[in-house]
Length: 344
Image (cartoon, rainbow, N blue to C red; front, side, top):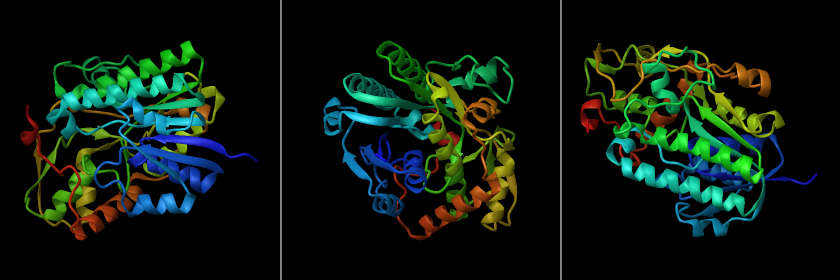
């Protein structure tokens, strides 16, 4: 049987490499990863995946359209995951978040419109309706059909969300006009080993590892999130791509198990044998109080069911970051910054 040709734009990133691993282990594909390869991405896990599954690598800055000329002009599946993310990056360099993500969207669509592409999946985020639940009191768990909104267009915190809203509209509109199938995935707090250093879990491990806080500050203790392990997210993404029911549809990929940041923090502390006290502290600017997806549509239409309990996945993530910090390797793009350090 002929192998399916798969392109993962942004495939060196956390979710991109997770999808590559899933495809390599479970299917018979010809996989290509295209990425700019930011600092720290060509690590041992990346090398192992590339070697194990004989994955093709194409390096380039895809904000420059000329980099797309390095790609083939025919793929069965294109996973468009390339973007920059992270609260730190949004607040410190919002103009770059806008420039990079917008360029990636525009260039990808131009290349797709000039190529022979079977189907495209665009990765979006729950950030797209950060104000919908916070300011307009829509139900939580949140379904895919809620209005998308952000509360303050001038706040740099929302630049990432603005580009993802643009991307959703652009890919769905191009798909209808040029007649190629598109699926939108809104990821919901995906976590696991190698997730980068700009998220709450690696921040917690870093802070406990440095052991300079007692009492240990819990930023946004009462806020809640629903965390989804990388293997479940990767499986769900492939299910969405390869189901014809998903054409021109939007799906949540995440977990419906909602926990507080206080519980998350204390669980990480226990795993790292923290014996001190805790202290409630203010949260990050623009951060929502609750976030939990309704995944009924994904369950019914994609047969998606997350399997990894958040505590089991957390053990794997904490262990990976402990090993990283023990290795004394530098933290790519810096590490933890408190809410006070990120005020703009």
